[in-house]
Image 1 (cartoon, rainbow, N blue to C red):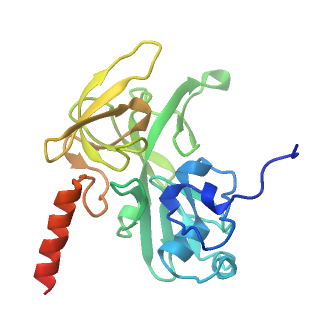
Image 2: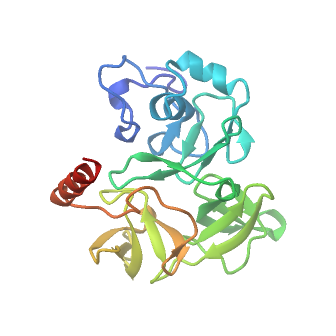
Length: 263
């Protein structure tokens, strides 16, 4: 039996959302332990090399991050396998670029460029609300942050808008019908819509019914739902497609239209 934590990750065992080719080597970069789970994150190596094409090899990525050029959530990260995850803001000051990690409707991490202004905040889903030592209230968010003395109205599953420069909560949105959400897991990963109804199942998983812009309804577990806006107004910009899933035929028609337009 192996002793201690695993240090390798075979390429075929890597999450499909990383979109690694099957024949590009035996191994994949194993994310370091951090704020996001292994299967729900994107290591910086993959982001810089496979997505942005700023490096050709893993060694080049190491050379980039060790120059302290890459920031995640306004903090310099020099670990090339640092696990960046959903809603994280990746900034490269040298090129003046900012990205937010969001899912596209196929459940993959999209390269979503954002403005410098938008890169100063992120949304956090509240996972826990508790009282700590000496009766200090605190919340724990989806990216492992513990924030003390939150607004007493903030409850589990709500979303808080967090200022990365000031390191404090600026705003919060309740988890309730009529608010805009994004799905972060399951078959409908990456889809966006408005909460229609929440079914409570005692002893099981609560199910949330969501309706998208095209009036299509779908359902998912409450754990996969991330509130992104108050009413129809999103607090962040969404990637291409705006979280609307099209059928294969609709995608084909869209491609044909684009081709005709370009011709």
